[in-house]
Amino acid sequence: MAKNENKVTVLAFEKKLVPSDGYMYGTQWTERGLVTPLSLKEKSVRGTISNRLKAAIKNDPVKLNAEVEKANLQTVDSCALAPEQDTLKLHFTLKVLGGLHRPSACNNAAFKESYCAAVRDYIGKEGFTELGRRYAHNLANGRFLWRNRVGAEQIEIQVKALNKGAEQEWTFDGRLSTRHFDEQNDKVDSLGGRIAAALASEDDFLMLDITCYVQVGKAQEVYPSEELVLDKNTSNKEGKKSKILYAINDIAAMHSQKLGNAIRTIDTWYPEFDDVETSAGPIAIEPYGAVTNLGKAYRTPKDKQDFYTFFDKWARGAELERIEDEHFVMAILVRGGVFGESDK
Image (cartoon, rainbow, N blue to C red; front, side, top):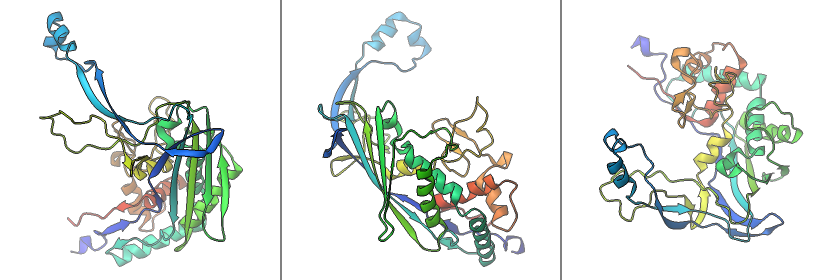
């Protein structure tokens, strides 16, 4: 029993960056007052067989011809601007919460006390300035647009602080880099300061309203979030769509999780970031630095660069070697999650 007395088996933190879903509309760059909600369209397409084939088929011309003659019929969702529209409008809100010094659940009083002291020490030294600036940078560069950002002729991002008595507005052109956070920008610093102040507060909050206009071209396709299909039953594919897009009340939309992932893509502190051959650029804040589309974890326990290695020492009063490691730990806590230790 004694060896487990310093363990905290119940430990959880609520997320402090809370985005809404993003709603998508079509408009014209020169007449943005006229907007229409974008709806999903279903279409059936006849594709070709393009997957890797078994050796017995690909090495036999007769079998290969028979295989490629088969129609690859698909029913998919799609979303596009109207013929007269050249601009996508994306709208969502972001709530920034304080109170990070208090876990939402913790069953070890001694740990809670040392953790609280570590957070207050960090706030005293750093005040969330670096994290706030990086979150603001990702709002300013339009990273949350994901694929909709590619090939855009113009981007305009309007951010409004809605807190009564502390209203403020910022406008960005989306030109800031998505590969680093080195650029200095007074408006980004101003927005970042408001985000940092909310994160550092005892129980205050900041409510941001984000409206983004992206000139992509008349009638061009745009990209809402794609739904994860949990039913993997392939015994009857008739009538089933191979791609299902996200919509709310018939309005094309982006998942709040996807917007949040983009905003917290601020980790440039992992070991391989400066390696040209292996770097993934900034990655989303994750305990093990997981980048699922690359199938790689950039922060492994073996290298002692993961969240738990840092957190278990830092939250119990030990100092970390680099301030960047503290930034990483605090960004994970802003992300939220369940971090209890095993009682075995």
